[in-house]
Image 1 (cartoon, rainbow, N blue to C red):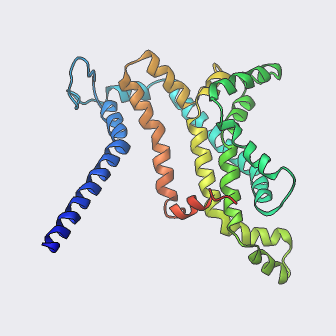
Image 2: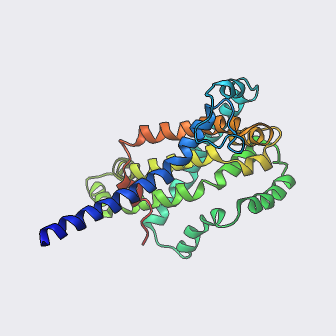
Image 3: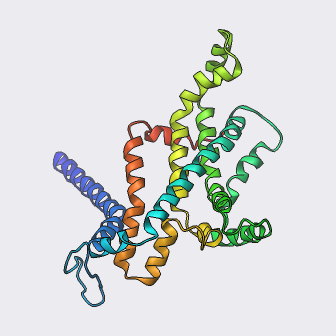
Length: 279
């Protein structure tokens, strides 16, 4: 009887685990599957045809989106801005991240938390305030203005994650390099930086994707001179059926999937978790 009760409880536990896992899969992959389905539908209107699958599949809206005149330029602009934002953020924030990880100075925690302020308030209200300043500085509708808006949303990733990565590199390893004649820069270049590189790569990925998907600030500051993929996608969603918007959504998510697939072998969950550790 005890053995039967044990197997009964084990079977019930496995059933609950399977149900929870299935619910997670549906919650996580359901919207993506729905987007793919709509992107390849000729016409999809659930109110008129209440079926899960579209009645007909077609590449009509892919042809429509890919023949838009501003699509190629918006794709190129999005990648140029994302690459420049990642590079500048790396150049500016990496020394700050190392200072937060290695040195003690007055106001350290305040300055570190200040990098969260850009993500602590509603973005549109923040962008409107910035737009007033940009207007006075003649940055509205300019490429530097768009780049600065993208940098604002990347500071947290490029500061906090590398700071955690640097903090996990023990000081004794740097001191050992100094003992054999290395200069402080050589110890950082050949010891600290390689060991912290997984966390830095995580920060670069998050920064690049954040810049690639930034829309509100670009819409407010850059339009009409500069339109990235998300800005163009918003316009398509407003003016055309949801099928065209789904095509843009698939185009926008492809770089994310490619980047995560490429860097998965170099950056694991441990490195990502280590980047968020705090003392």
